[in-house]
Image 1 (tube, rainbow, N blue to C red):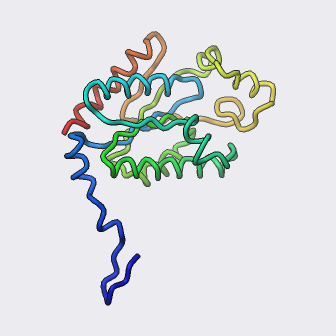
Image 2 (spheres, rainbow, N blue to C red; image 1 turned 45 degrees about the vertical axis):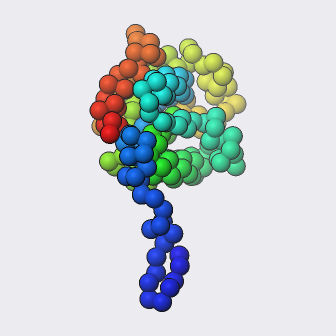
Image 3 (cartoon, one colour; image 1 turned 180 degrees about the vertical axis):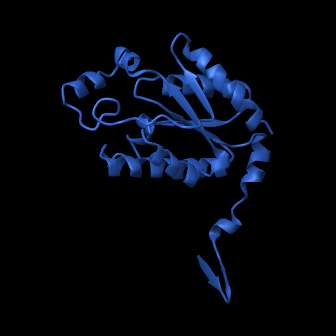
Length: 201
């Protein structure tokens, strides 16, 4: 904050506003928050969405566990307190991208309604698009490419969502994708069908 005489103002008042950046990019920025169990297909679907947006001239950024927990949140574990802090930081980073006019595609388990509401409050309800990748636990366990469910079943991983920690389904998501019987490409198309009219300038 700066104090000049009786006028107190923030540096944020001098930053180019989001609207001007959206006009420059010819898009409306949003935060697409993909939630679902580990192995549900969030990141796979997000990568397809990102590629298709790129082909259509939209600028976007994927945030997921690989690029967040390896960097900005490398000091956090998986306790309830750390999960909340993880999501809080992600939401704050997403808000920065939002204010730059960039579409953010977030892929995080974010297992409880409370924790997703925290993100929504930070991002802003109008800009927070919750996408529920609804893949049953048994299907996620079949995929289990990283062997996480096997470790959780053996007690080698504590507080693992779906096994030793609960997952609460979204009540009223922007869109719900049931991935059984459809491809990741088809899942991405379902999201894009709803998303494109919203982000087009």
